[in-house]
Length: 478
Length: 50
Image (cartoon, rainbow over all chains, first blue to last red; front, side, top):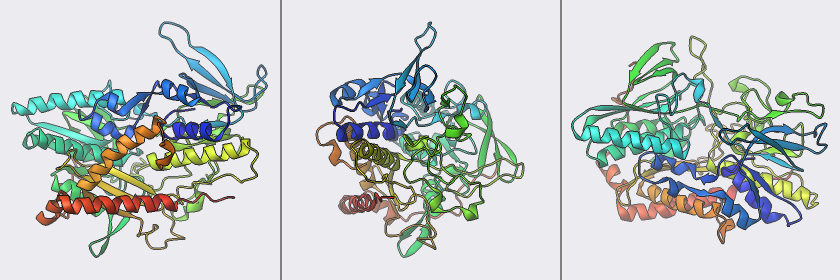
């Protein structure tokens, strides 16, 4: 289920490793694959939708993968009274007609459904209401239109305020919001209207540079420096003001209301606000053989699927790297796996904070492209090994044992652009293995420069090539 | 607005640092180094058996 980075990767490798006696089916409500990291550029009018998406059906047809463009709504892991085999129920909606439901049987199920963009968590948040987003190509197109319209107004002298960041106290993807704000500022300069704009970065992070991974330490120029220093510096050199520790409570036309960790309430006006929503699971329900609902057996309250993580509630000081899942296998049903954003993390990575009014305000754990794809591949390997009769144990890809490389554009131009290239190892800090900083400083690095921009552009074309399953795609690492 | 950070005390890059960010010879070298770091990172991924 799902044709995003994790699901598409899992399906592609399953089809590669299994012979034709095995059927690989992808269920997704989307007709197109979207290279989400490049939505930032789409959201500023620097790319078109065609440059960040491609139709899935022809790729799957060529690869021998059955593609069902429909939405999964239920899981029946024990079968049902009518259908003895484990199956999912999918729903197709055609406008003006009642939804059609049908079953798809499975022997192994990979839940890679990604996030539900929970705009409803904040009143007034989201496209069609009072803010824009870059989470999907449609949203990013609307953001680009709004941005370019304001550029035209600024060219004739109007002053505008742009607010970019997180639209709720429990958001993730602060890195994407950061990337959008620095690109937006760069584009304002390119359009010659920077002097007419006020740019504000509004985030739920406790400190800038947290990015949902509790920040990081980087060895640079003779110092071991926390990422909040670098992030603050990047914003400072671009005259981007910042508000941290903020939970956006409500948004009206042209103004938003937020609460801070100190429990204070504030108001902020804007001409354009790009605020990311918090994530939740897509809302799958599960039923046992008798038809009794067992959703809470498979899913956490936030809708993400429980896997082999330690979900015991414990304070931050007792969090361990070992809490994080390794095989992504559903403990209740060993033939079900969850990959990418769809699995339930045991807890956040960043230290949790609560305001004096009891409002949680801290960054949720990110699952970026590289670990999502790696998890998808590893889950595929585990399933393929089981189906081909190998005695191998399940394969593992704990985020406490994986590294990640992220390249955040900070201005798109072949010779004047820059990007922040960052690597962390491991993604989830392991203070038992790396006592002082939680990470291996040899592989936790960061720098800004033109080289990063070239890398970002190359990765855009390279990963789209890989996702299209063109010749040699397996040579490109996740 | 409240608690807004206007970056008065933030670390700022020097003109030399800003220059080096887009200085082609240096960035070509950094392109090689960053890619090497990323490849070494990918090579570190462990697929351990239970």
